[in-house]
Length: 417
Image 1 (cartoon, helix red, strand yellow):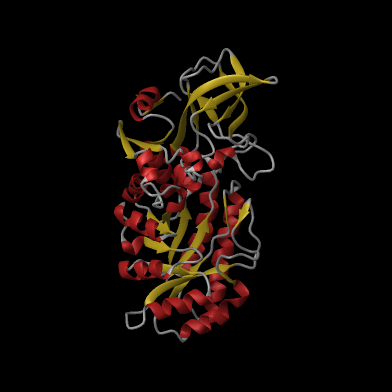
Image 2 (cartoon, one colour):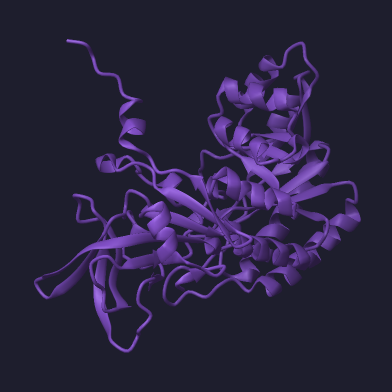
């Protein structure tokens, strides 16, 4: 891939500088619309801003029809700026501040997802004298999650209310005049690649919601079944069979919707909607040999793309990396692609097969639209935030400028001596 929507990436690199994140709006649209067509119409799709909170990326998905799932006060403001309507916005996450809870109430969002009895009581105090606020109670299910390498429920977790404690919390809520329980939320895990596991988890959440309704007498105006749809990054991984997933999920959604026609159903999607649309573009600054290994040293790495670097992984596995300057694959060589940081962990790709790499060449880390700079230590060595560029209808737009020295230094305060 040397072009995006007909635009040479080399020209974009010259215009906007490197390193930068490059997003393709056509891929965003294709991913969303394909999934929307496949899934049952009763299942609403919400975009999880944590995956990529760039306001222009969010606006593309909101324009396509996605709701917004946010987890901070800034994400709440970002979603509104991107055009997300309050009635199609939910706020979740542990440790919400009073300021964030007040902002949710003032905005009139669809629901606040409450994670504990303590948070429930705190919210009730904050809305004293105002109209009751709609909440979903987040449940930490007792059944086991399938298919996720990062489980968010089913074990001791900081997320949600343990299923066995749910009736007691509902009883507490009944005595809180500022609270209206409107349903339940569950999120079981992320990056699930087996379609059968997603069907299993969705069916389990819906079954649990119905059981809690019967046991506790709660209203099921809304049920959020989570999501966790995965994207394949590494060798020996296969992308999710989205058609098979949709077939299975649609069966359980149709059954639940027939029994609960007034219940609104939500699936949260973050990584799945944006990962394929993004490429992290870096320029090679040095090519060197060290004890039999060839290194291509680029101008960006861990500081902008922690996910690709794989800090914390037992075995280093590479995101797909492509040469953006040379497409001559007749003479492939092996390179370890590193960044500019003073740590041996700053490795974007280990022993990557690439055409002959020279100083000045561009490399692209593909499938990088999710958990990029905002999930990375962008201030390491004070390099700052990279530029972000969105190509829409054949036109490249700068959607975030890179940090300057002034941006970084102006936030610091020098003590007068």
